[in-house]
Length: 345
Image 1: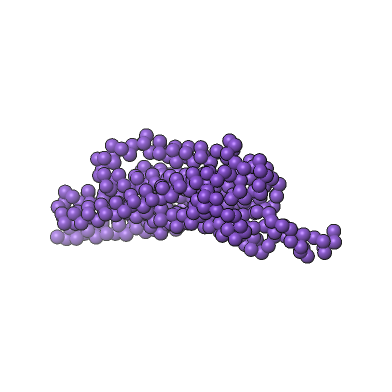
Image 2: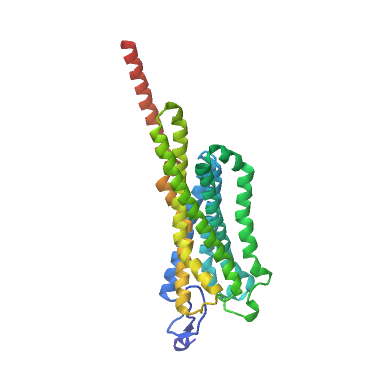
C-alpha cells in the first residue's frame, strides 16, 4: 500500500471512532498510547494489591464482620482492575466494538463494580455506625453473621440487576450508535445508577458525621472516668474508632475518585449534548474512578499496623522470623533479669 494513502482512525480516549484523518503512517495517537499504558498500570497494581488484601484479611487478621466487608470490597476492586486491563483488547480488536454484548460488557463490568463498591462502602459505614452510635449490645443483636451475609449478597445482586437492564432491551443499539458509553443506553437509564450512587454517598457521609460526633462524646466521657473497670470498654471503643477512621479514609477517597464521573452520567440522563471534549474529559474521569481500585491496599498499609506486619511476613518471611526470634530472645533476657532481681532481694 502506498504510504501517502494510508489512514489511521482518530480515536478518542473512550475508543469512539471519529472521521478518518490522513497520516503518513498507521497507528494510535501518543495520548491514547499513554492512556492505555496507564490503564494497564492500574490493572497490575490493583491485581497485586487487592490479592494481598484478600489473603491477609482472610487468613491472618482476626475475622470480624467489618473484615468481611473489606474482603468483599477488595474483590470488587480486583475485578475493576481486571476490567481496566481488558480495555486494551477493544483498541486492538476493533470488531469487539461492533458486537452489542461485547460493547455493553466493556462498560457494564465497571458499572457493576462501581455500584457494588458503593454499596459496600455504605454497609461498612452502617457497620461502624451501629458499633459506635448503637453500642455493643445493639451491635451484637443486629450485626449477626446472617445479616452481614445478606448485606454482602445485596451489594452484588442489586448492581447486577440494574446493570443487566441494557442486555434485556433497554438500549439504543437498534439506532446503530458508536460503541461509546454516552450513546448506547436510554437517557433514563443513566439516571438510575448515578442518582443511586449519589444518594448512597450522601447517606454514607451523614453516618460518618454522626459517628464522629458520637465518638468525641464517648471518648471525652471515657477519659473523664478513669476507673479500672472501664479500661476494657475504653480500649474496645478506641479500637472501633480506629477501624472507623480507616473505613472513613477509604470512603472519602472513593467519593473523590468517582463523584466527578457520576456527574457526567447524571448529565447524560438529562440529555446533555455529547461532544469530543466531553468524551475525553469523561474518559479521564472514569480512569480516575478506576484508579481507585488500586488505592485501598496503600490505605491499609498506611493506617493498619497489623496489615503492614502480615504483608511484611508474606513478602519477607525470613526477615520477619529473625525479628520475632530477636524479640523472643529479648523477652527471655528481660524475664531472666527480673528473676535475678527477685532472687537477690
